[in-house]
Length: 187
Image (cartoon, rainbow, N blue to C red; front, side, top):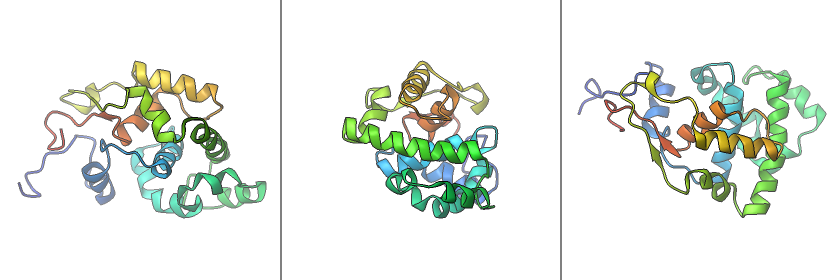
């Protein structure tokens, strides 16, 4: 297989960040708590925007949010929020920034209760990877019963920007569900 003959999911464009993300991250099972927190923040930041926009700002997010260390993010002050609102390397939306801080605090609470966020979050799929069989990306669901249950429980625990569609995108990003289309070499 050469670079010219690789067939990817049809949402992937020519942006090298999108190609790398598709080829090496999207749909790959993720069990590291800090990386899971990163995707929780990034998926919430994406609300109303394209994933490409977020990928283009990912390095800025990693810098601005202390490499997504939930302990550090949970302790952010109003002064730090003001600094983040002035940072052009991230999406400067107060609600999204404040939700990242709230979610960091709730994330730590879940870790304490379940031993790890990984153990908690993968419980929504029974610890198994769910595999879709969509031929075209547009035919895949935007939410499922599992993402609705995840959203409901996260919201009950005080998380923000975790609706069923955001939760489903999180599940795709972290490999809880593998939605590579049937024509994609990663299927």
